[in-house]
Length: 210
Image 1 (tube, helix red, strand yellow):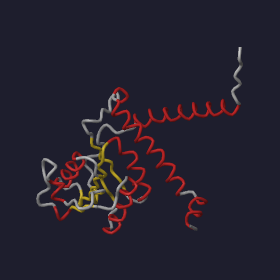
Image 2 (cartoon, rainbow, N blue to C red; image 1 turned 45 degrees about the horizontal axis):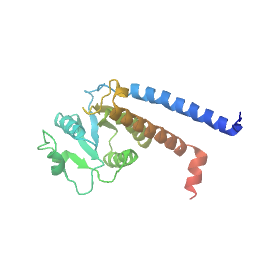
Image 3 (tube, rainbow, N blue to C red; image 1 turned 135 degrees about the horizontal axis):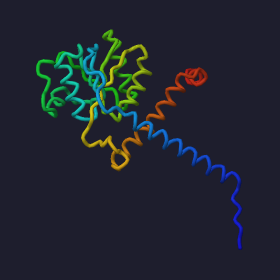
Image 4 (cartoon, helix red, strand yellow; image 1 turned 120 degrees about the vertical axis):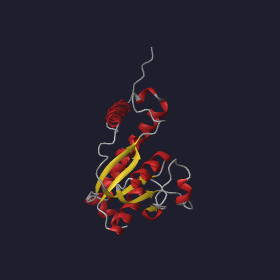
């Protein structure tokens, strides 16, 4: 009989991997259960409505909110360069006729952190202090994390939308939805660590010296 001796460090590595995976899975379940399943506040008026691009449901919701005068202005963040309001209006069922003067398109952002920074600059330029944030429900937690970090003094009202393709109930039974939520959770973790490091004096000072 041949005995195979497993090095101690290999066993330790395996234990760490198991613990890390277990922690990640536990966090994933928590994350999935905290995805909003309804709009909790659909009556408070804000200075601005902010829509993060990524689906016509978001645009339609943002335009409808502006049409119902839920804010003074609408900002659509993350629009591809060269796309103008007319092009966006053609992809939804109820275009914002007569409201073009109250709508601004942002072309600078290409990710959620960029959305937050682009929106913060736009909000500050107009002296706004509150916004209603429109994005998909599964994307809301990370969006709020980035927006609160970029605008700690701004009141943010979440306004999630619910794409039909995302099966929030029993999400683990749907491979596409499970992959989407797992990916979003992992991005949420990275954003949490990045923002924590950005607020850590030693890390911030080392980057400021570069």
